[in-house]
Image 1 (cartoon, one colour):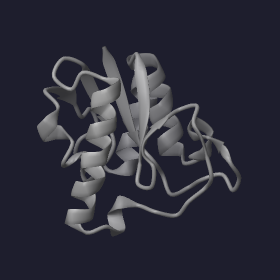
Image 2 (cartoon, rainbow, N blue to C red):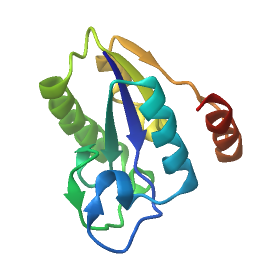
Image 3 (tube, helix red, strand yellow):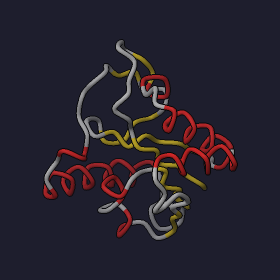
Image 4 (spheres, one colour):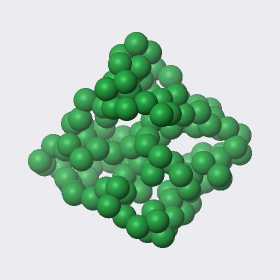
Length: 134
């Protein structure tokens, strides 16, 4: 099974929404379109909620891994891995990371099959890549 993991974004709706609609940045929307065409299952990597199902309703929040210390990110990743291991097969499923380095750093060592299609690209180049590949 192909599973896409998309990082949350700071740009959000100002009301309770399904997770797939809460994040309003162009990068998130483009990554979601790509994931819908190229994976069987999609989860959002949320700084506050860890792993989110697209249909899960949540309130807007202001939290990012970019402001967290390394040990906090490690604890966050441990929780995400615990959730992922209940919903996926970390050794057999194929994971597509549509998320920055901070969001994937501690997840990747525990996942056998993964790809990072936009690794090393700035946001503008990521948007271009997603447009060309969706």
